[in-house]
Structure formats: C-alpha cells, structure tokens
Amino acid sequence: MAENPSEPIHILLVEDNPADVRLTEEILREVKLPAYLTVVNHGEDALAFLRRQGQYTRAPRPDFIFLDLHLPGKNGYEVLAEIHSDPTLRTIPVAVCLGSEAEKHRLERYQLPVDCFFIKGFDPQQFLRVLTHCRAATNDASSTCR
Image 1: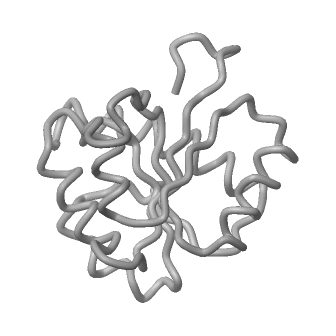
Image 2: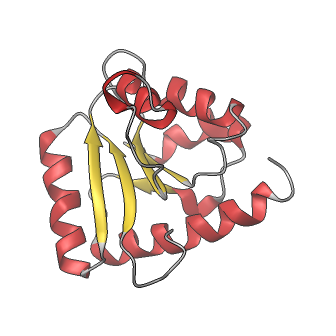
Image 3: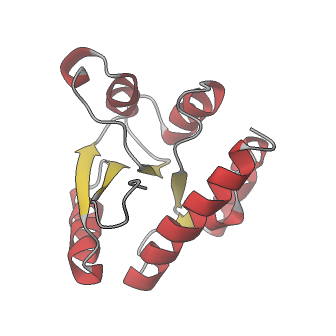
C-alpha cells in the first residue's frame, strides 16, 4: 500500500464483468478507503499496464492487484504466471478472485498466501481483510520464498 497510510492506495482491478467492477467501486465507497481504482478488462491490458507499455506508459505502479481468473484473451492464470515470473512485479500483492473454492488447487504452484484468495460476491469486511492480510503476507513471502 502507499507508504503514508493517509495517502490513497492504487488498486488495479483486472475484471471483465461490469457488475463486479461496480460492486468493487461500491465497496470502496462503503469502507471509505482512500484509493485510486484502475480497471482493465483483459489480461493483455493488465500486463501492459504493469509493464507500462503502449497506452499505459505513464501508468502508476499499483499497490495492489485484484485479479479475476476468467478473462477474455489471456486469462487470469496466465497473467498470474507472468506476474509471478517477473521479479519486479511479483512483489505487488495479488488477490485472486475465485468463482468457487474448487479453483484453489490450480493456483498451488504460485504459493499465494491463504489471505490472497476471495470468492466473488465478497463483502466489505472481507475486502478490507484481503487488502490488509494479503499485503502483509505478500511482504513476508517476498523476503523468503519468492
């Protein structure tokens, strides 16, 4: 998250469903979290944003990524694999949006902390928990196993 807790954090939401984008925007307003939300709806755009390529050359480095797994084109699994393999990107906390608990097994190789998963339709308290705990767990993991 931002270095200064009073500064807004920058969240990259990789989501192709407009209803889920609206839900995330509503939750951000409800929890009164000072944040900038950037939305991309394709895996290719997410990677271009993160690498500051094409139309995203001036994109800020996000403090946090919410990643849907089911995207058109390059899917969330492929995006996560590229983030995980890039030393400059893998330090950004990524919370993965699952359609169901059954999808977790496909993500075991990334050794994501347990707090970095959530099921679609999450509530405001779960949103804050994911932001707080996933970031802490990612920072701990980056110094050991990443």
